[in-house]
Length: 102
Image (tube, rainbow, N blue to C red; front, side, top):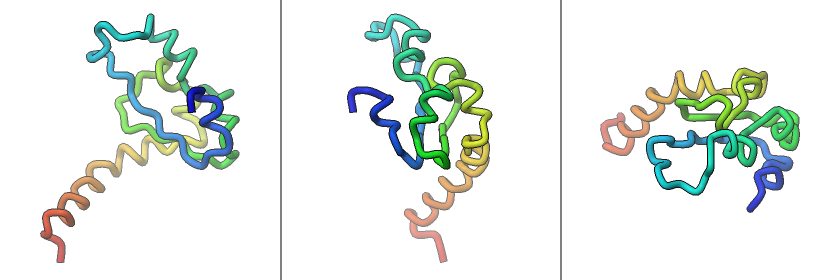
């Protein structure tokens, strides 16, 4: 998709990624505000997804840049459980891949 609104229509899961400001020197984006206007996940954009869609974000979040606080803290957000269990899940995957599981 070339338009975020088109890409969000009827989806089950939305995974936002952090805009990495530390890598943005010389970038094509004029400002964080412009990025949010074009690509940020707002309640209005979230309404394009399925009503029971979940919102994920690996963190850390730049609220008001890639995701609106109302969405990050909203009922459809699973960001806190995702972050809470993320380390344990990665450890389990690494253990399996390393062959140390029994």
